[in-house]
Image 1: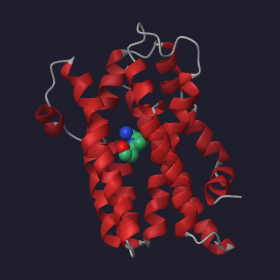
Image 2 (image 1 turned 120 degrees about the horizontal axis):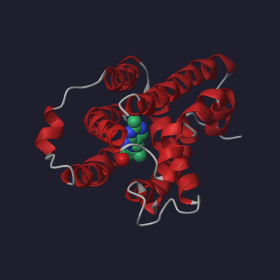
Image 3 (image 1 turned 45 degrees about the horizontal axis):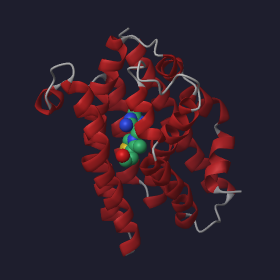
Image 4 (image 1 turned 135 degrees about the vertical axis):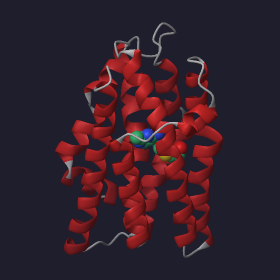
Length: 220
Ligand SMILES: Cc1ncc(C[n+]2csc(CCO)c2C)c(N)n1
């Protein structure tokens, strides 16, 4: 069993609450209020800025060129890929990237990003990548499922571009390589005590993801 499968199994309830949150179901149905999505997306831009720092830390902590490149690829995927989705949606509301950068962080944004950065600083490379994993893998899992719901990708659904972006090959491949990378990092052998430690990090990151969706819904 891959380390990823073991982590999902150990945090099944938290993982389900994150990946099947009402926020994402409402995106697929096109019924999510725009105020909720807008608050989420502005906060997500601030979240991504902090995740660039987390990936920079992963590059810094890499012990091989390959590990450093892995951090660099994640960093690039955010700066040159994912952020364009946010900038495009926000342009439609008259918000510029400078407006986004100047927004105040809401508590769930601060909580989640600093949780990941804290594990990155205090822990080893596996702790950091486990803290990052629910974010990368979870979005790919969510978008793949939502894309298969009839009507979710229809031009009339304002959330179709969001679903299509994360269901696209680029993010699906990034998620698949993250699953493999967790096994490489752990050498395929994680003892019970160490597993319990990282399962705690994975479960907490999943709960912080659910809180991030809820932050959007609370603005509806
Ligand atoms: C709260 C929140 N969780 C996960 C993601 C998705 N995500 C963040 S970094 C990354 C990898 C490189 O782009 C991915 C897929 C998000 N945007 N916001």
